[in-house]
Structures are given as structure tokens and as C-alpha cells.
Length: 181
Image (cartoon, rainbow, N blue to C red; front, side, top):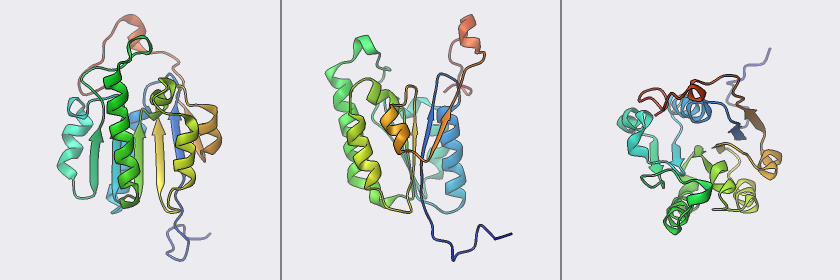
């Protein structure tokens, strides 16, 4: 059996998508970030539509900043389809331009809730696909959020659909600190 960690193997980065109505999309991507950091990789986490300072993962991971840049372009509210403002769009644009301007510095980029940004028409799938096609060969890109667009699914190498079989939110339980944020 071949040793998968043999340095003679060319390093190749892939495109991963975590989507669906189930819980765990961001959690899966944070796990990938921790694993990459443990291997000395340089990682960018960009939260779209979320405020980073409110999440438990930010509070802990921000202490591990050697190879991690943890950014957010979310406003203090989560946008909804019926209530998207110009400020929401402007915040997204600033975050996306940060990714574009800085992406060459990273081995892994996590684009958390980017699928939601497409769903809200903040960006077109074609614009994202163009970015993905131009990524450095070694770079891993992870995209999360509900409603992944078919064009992004086609461009990805791995797609996981988180399916909610049962969720306590359906019984009225709100997001809990340390569990959902």
C-alpha cells in the first residue's frame, strides 16, 4: 500500500461544499480548518452574513492566530430574503473583495455561508466559478451554506448535503451559546 503522505506526491487542493438544511455545515468547515492548522497550513475563514465576534469558534480560534486569518463581512443581523438592505450587499462586497485581494496567501479558504450569498443574489454563481477555476493548484476551498447552486455543485470535487432528519428547533428551541454559536 502506498504512503499517502509521501512528499513525492504532488499536493493538490480541492473544492468542497457543505450544504443542506441540516445542522453542521460551519462546524464541519471549522474542523477542516483546525486540521489544516495542525499541519502548518495557512487558513482564511471568511464568514458571509455572520458577525464573527458572536461565535464561540471565533472566540477560541482567534487565540490561535499564527496561521489563521478569521474575518467576517456580516452585519449585526442575519439578512433574510425579504429584508436585504444595501448595507448587507455592501458588507458582502467588502468581504468578497478581501478574499479576491488576499487569496494567494492561503492554503485553505473557508467561505462560510457563501451559498446563502448566492441565494440572496449578492453574487452570481458564475463569478464564484471563475474564482474557483483560477485558484492555485494546491489551494483547498470550502464553501458552506444552504441551497448550493447547481453550477457550484458541478464545479466542486466533494459535496455533502446535510439533511435534517430531526431538529430541536422544530420544537421551538432557539440557538444555544456554545452549541449553535
